[in-house]
Figure 1 (cartoon, helix red, strand yellow):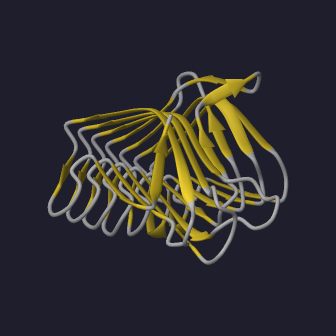
Figure 2: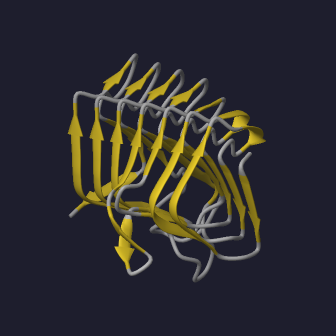
Amino acid sequence: GAIAADRGTLTLTRVKLTLNTAVRGGGLHADQAPVSGNDVEVSDNTATEWGGGVNMMSSSLQLGTGSRVARNVADFGGGIFAMAAGQTIIGGTGAAASGRLLIEDNNSGGSGGGFGVAGRLPFGNAPPLTLRNLTLRQNLAAGSGGGAYVFLNGSGVADPVIVTDVEFTANEAGFSGGGLYLATPRSGSESSAQRLSFRDNVAGELGGAVFPQVTLVAG
């Protein structure tokens, strides 16, 4: 891909990553490297496996005003793929990035059109997976999770996922969860959802807006 960040901190401002190709992370690959910034465009990239636009390994992504992840293609996680829990995919909330992150028109041959998250539940005092201040629009997945696909397995903390201020609009999944597919198959686990919007999402089989395989506590 265009950028590979390994065990550092990456801040981007007025950067465009486009028309790149990789096995994982067509535009950007981050391994234990937090990424933040404003006016960042990750578009028209391709990954043959995971993360058409961005591939995150135990990292966090915080992109704000003027930022978008668009028209990327991968087998899993068309726009963004994140491996392991305790990560964040959020719009701007601080000095390094402000405003919403737009994730639109991405395509996954499997699951997670806009983004896909897969890995183990967080353990002990590890932070939960946090998704905040995002707009997911017109993303497509052949499998599940047209807008977003989240599957965390294993035995970990009881509150593994927090989803806040996220808009799901006109996303489509071939199977389940047109807007959002969320699964944390652990007995007693609860995930938190606040201020979510679902509009015109479509699933071929189950859950046009959302398909939760977890106790979802709405605030």
